[in-house]
Structure formats: structure tokens, C-alpha cells
Figure 1: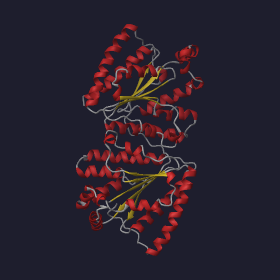
Figure 2: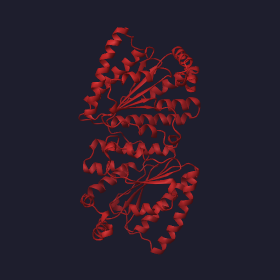
Figure 3: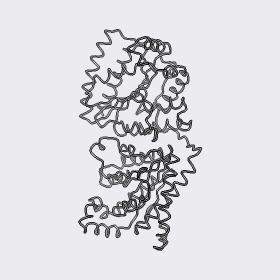
Length: 491
């Protein structure tokens, strides 16, 4: 792809200057339209070292309002970022609605440099390419404009520029060991870049090549392409509908909620004995997970008053408080609503060796958002596959993923609601919204059945916790977590 690319002929300097002045003004005007329409715009600048990415970006944004864009310089991951999933540091930096995010360097540089250095195997490299394609497609499907530029120069021009930078003490710091290695192995890098660009060149997120031999010409190409891409995206914001992709992940069969027997119980003595034993075992496992740097993600969903809070409490009390965090998920905040719906969950992912417990999860997209009309049908229908992809990313990272649906029947819920309402110290637990949700029980049950059928994958299966008897539910949850962690530690 890159090898066969032929650049447009460079205009005269006078023509470039005239077009560039006009393009800068037009981009500033488009920025206001982007803000007005709530369009998030992610601009990726990648390419050869010393190709002039930073210089072109600095000049292009001069006329833009700095309140509505952010520039991210992405080189080596920080120590904290190295303990997170591969895409973590990119996902948490995606732009909000109406904002621009300019990435000087991107996942391309990270993926290709690790492969070129031998740090990443061919198999893992292919997996990361798949992750990149899913990431970019998901951003686009959820309304983000993704524009990717590759700044191209020849081996000879790169060598000349690197020498010029190194000869000046004020710019020598800009030349990295990676830049020198890249120029020395230009042909090898070209082969890898060509394959990468070909593989990740998608209709929803295409690559644009920039002839970077002349800096003003490079800025003009980038600015005019970005303006054209924005104009197209703004036209497509109305009545946007995205194809629903077929699930490609193996699924585990799940029963319908109505067929799950809820008569399982434990005596108080059985409960106390098992609770002590299982909490002790989980405490031991937490230490082993930390030493092996294995992350654990535990997701709780279930009916209101099903006992999620008490269940989580018994689980968390067995863990070292320095190595876990519980995330109670409520309605999204304004900053969260302005981004991809998975953004707020990516931000809460644990470091390796740590445990994250989610009280309510990303599955709100296909339950409450679906039923209450907070998203379109196209949005929630797409979400099944997007969530499977998200969880596959976590699984590939090495995480243990445990998903609980805490199940009770309607009569049990009514009894617990009534008890909460009539007990002063429990009244904070019951809200008008709980009663409203109860009226939609059948709608929610249909949604949950579909959710579990479509998202109970082999790498992240659902576990139904029968919770008419809270004691039984707590013990089953502990056993399930212990079993999943022990299985992972065998690897």
C-alpha cells in the first residue's frame, strides 16, 4: 500500500501559501460546527521519525480554539500504563462530543516497534492488529470521526533531517534511538509499515498518506483532507445507522431466567462454616494472583433488592484492601455521556494483579438504556458484539472475567421492597425508580435473557446466582470466583 503510493504533484509555493491561508480559516470555522453538532474528532498523526508531524500539527491548530481540542504526545507507555490492557491508554484519551483530540504518535508506533524489536511474536502482533481494527471501528460506529495520517519521507531525506537535528544542541534531544534504528533499518521498517497500513486501512477509518518532503505542503495536505472528512461526517450525523455485525465468538448456552429454580438454601451453620473456609481460600488466592500479575474483573448485574451489595461485601472482605476496588456504577456523568459508552469502564479497569468489582456494568447498554430509550435500537443491537470484543480484549490481556446475574423472583423482590420501605434504617435502599423498574419486570426479563444468550462467551461466561436465599447466593458467588481464579493459576 505504502510502497505503491504515488503522491500528488506539489503545487507552486505561491499556490500553497494561498490555499493554506484559506484552509486554516476553514478549519477554524469547521471547529465551531463540530462543537455545535457534538461530533468527536480523533486525528492520528503517525509516520517516519523526523517527517515533521509535530511541526505540521503545531501550525495547523494555530487558528483553532484551544478550549475545544487536546494534543496528546504518545511515545512509550508509562509504568502504570504497562500494567493495563494494550488499548487502555488510547481509549481513555478519546475525545468528547464536540471536541478534537490530536494524537502525535499512536497505537501504530507501539504495535510495529514492538514487533520490529522482537518483543512481540507474529501471533501476538496479528492479535493486536485485530484489536486496533475493532477499536477504530467501534469509535466510528459510535459517532467519532477517525482521521489517520501517515507522514512519508524517503530514507535519504530522513537521514538528512536526523543529522540536522542532531547537529543543533537545542534540537538533538528530539532524535531518539528508535529514530536512528528506523533509518538504519529503513527497508525492514517499510515492509512492516506497509503490511500494517494495508491491514488497518478500513472504510470507517482510512489512512491518508502525506508527502512530507516540504513542510508547508505537508500541512496543506493534512488540513484540506481533515476539512473534507469533517464535512462528510457532519452530513452523516443525521439518521446515522450502522450495520449490525455477526458475533464471531463461541458462546456458552444459557437457560432462560424463568426456568431457573430458586429453592436452594443453606442453614445458618452451613453458611458460617462455608463462609469462613471460602474467604480464607480467596485471601490466599489474592496473594497468588498479585504475584503472578493476573488481573480479575468481577461484574455484578441483577434485579433490584437481589442482594448484590451483601454479596459484594462478603467477597471484598476476604481481599487485601490495597489490591482491589469496588466500582458502584450509577447514571453516567456529563463527561461520560459525551464519550463512547465503554469509556467510563475502560477508565476503571484494574492494574495487573489487582481486582476490580463492578456493581452494575457496561451491560446497562442492553438493559436500562434499551428499555428506557436512552440509546437507539441500532446502538443496543450493536452493543452485544462490541461488549464481546471489549471482554475479548480483557481476556487476551490475561484477565479473569467473572459475570454474575443475581436472580430472585417477583414475590421475593416485593417482600424485600416492602421491608426496606417499612424499616427506617433501610429506607435509603428503596427509591421511586425501583418501583418503576418493577413495573417493567417482563421487559427487563426479556432483555436479560437476550443479553445472556448473546454475551455468554467461553472466555467471559455468565453465572446465574440464585438469591432467594441470600446465604446460598453469597456462598455460590465465592465458590465461582475461587474456581475461576484457581483455573487461571493453572495456566
